[in-house]
Image (cartoon, rainbow, N blue to C red):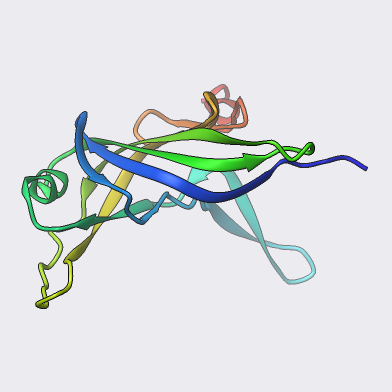
Length: 168
């Protein structure tokens, strides 16, 4: 029987905005890749993914505390964000080792989050990003790169938009 390495809990993470550390040990959500679809008629309606065309992407991360990092990360202009995180990997022989992951995101904050507070509690601010470019690496290997402005839709080493572009 084949063994699949088990990935379990995240050990740590950091968030950078334009190469400056702005958050660490926070919650984050990387973009979902949703392909555009078209409806066809085949024994009634049938929805077909248009592989290579990607719907709008969003990413979020939580910034703990009110400081200059919050302001820098939510300034309404294009930024380059980098989210680094480490997940634990358990191999078939039971050995455990950390695996480094990096997500590179180019985008614009969708707004400046509300600042809320309560005595005795820390403040958390969710920053939502409109994503133009998203590239994900796990253990140094690129898994995907979606770049809407430069017509790149590369998943597992294959650029699906290049199949479209060669006909243009």
